[in-house]
Image (cartoon, rainbow, N blue to C red):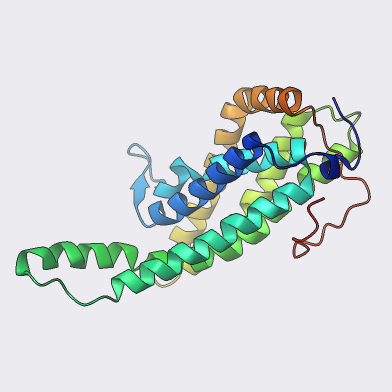
Amino acid sequence: MKNNPNPSGQHGLSITFVWLAVTFCVCLIISNIFVPRTWQLWGLPIQLTGGIVIFPVSYIINDCLTEVYGYRKARLVIWMGFLLSVFVALVSALVCSLPAPLYEENRAVAESFNSFFGLVPRTTIASLLAFFFGSTANAWVMSKMKLASDKGRGFGWRAIVSSVVGETCDSLIFFPVVFLGVMPITGILGIMLTQIIAKTLYEVIILPVTSLIVRYLKKREGLDTYDYNISYNPFNIADVE
């Protein structure tokens, strides 16, 4: 297994990496669509968004990408998700602006569609800001903690700490932008806190599976990247080698 501090130049974009990147982007885009659907947690005075069902998976994949392929490859995937989310938001806005259907019986469906997908651009704008800072913070903390660890040990702690940092950054930006004026301030603060706690619990519960995936990926790819002497500039997306 390679512990080369700069292995990326010797390792192309494998099929496994491509699948992880695609799954990451799909989870991000779907979670943006699910966000407007809020729900009460089994009779408790706690409200969550539909995005909680799938969004934490993107952070788990982010941890795997950073741990195995390094910060630079994770940064590339983050930008892929960012740009594809912009595309979906623009197309949603375009479709919602199309003229009404020809037949009256189809207009109710069109209105329901517009009322739902009309929120996608707003949630996507919030998500793009939150996602960029949250995912970048997650990858940065994961990478730095690995360098400071004893030969890369303690993946579980690094995954949890990095996800808490990333998800906190994400929630502090996302929920005020999406729900300000739609939900009371106390409600926004409550949903922010519950989302952070729920996502962290999600990470902890799924951690054994994440650890197995990371070990499998390292063995399959023959790769275990340490980010020595790299640029952590989040805008330096051309640096993937």
